[in-house]
Amino acid sequence: MKARRVPVDGFAAVTMLVLCAIWGAQQVAIKLAAPDLAPILQVGLRSGLSALLVGAFSAWRGERLPPWRQTFRPGLLAGALFAAEFLFVAEGLRHTTASHMAVFLYTSPIFTAFGLHLLLPAERLRRRQWLGILVAFGGIGLAFLEGGRGGVSLDSLVGDLLGVLAGAAWGATTVVIRASPLSEAPPAQTLLYQLASACLILLGAAVVSGQAGRVAWTPTAVASLLFQGVVVSFASYLTWFWLLRRYLASRLAVFSFLTPIFGVSLGVLLLRDRLSASFAGGAALVLAGIAIVSGAGFARPR
Image 1 (cartoon, rainbow, N blue to C red):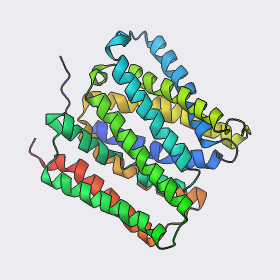
Image 2 (image 1 turned 90 degrees about the vertical axis):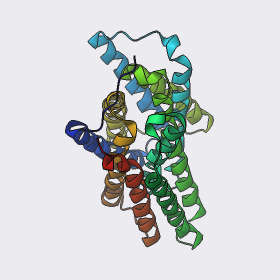
Image 3 (image 1 turned 120 degrees about the horizontal axis):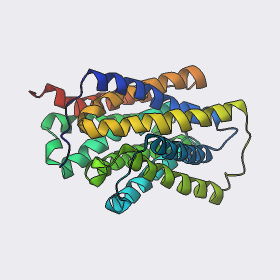
Image 4 (image 1 turned 60 degrees about the vertical axis):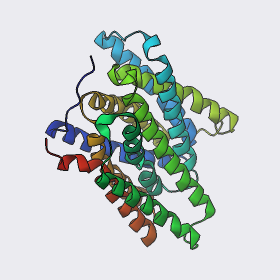
């Protein structure tokens, strides 16, 4: 029997706030360590480290995972989408700023809401939410417009587009988890599918692209890798999947609009990212659209 998801309560709200701060910092951490460790290599290594931690944690708890054959196909699909998300992130950060990536990556709730609308009757979009999708994509267009007017290079536009593709891949991953037997699987099992896939795919991509040889184990590189491997990919993702099993995904997504705010703020403070007026306006529209799409559920009678 499937577990019933409930609306977000105070505990879930505070937990999501902490998760958003952590996720907002990860693009900045990758960018800071990029001169010493290629982004794609960072994400591949951190995924392997996190997979080992998740496996050890499950064994320590004595957690018995259900038969893998029950979740094998959706698990592989979720893993491939997760790997694609961070492939786009890693490559995108080679071309654009951490602030831009923080905004475009976290368009994912739009793609999540649209996918769940198609597959799950309990999460159908209403008219107000469709308006939010139009507002968000209008913001993406405005943010891209700065490149058309000579504000940024074509290289930066490519990075921004990769950020949007990463957001779409993340949204698709959430839809696969919610609409398949993975929604009832232990969070550790779901996460292991994704981390193992990302480790193999991204390390392979680093070798093929010639980026695996660019390594300098500086304090910045080590700190970034530990932050991503232990805090982001291990602790925060386990918490995220735990929340997905207990609360409505579309209600949790309303908090994710805070993540770009953390990401952009840290990018400006730590990396001295510069923000144009058109990008700032576009980012504001994206965040407004996400808030409309994800927050519409709070206006419904409970």
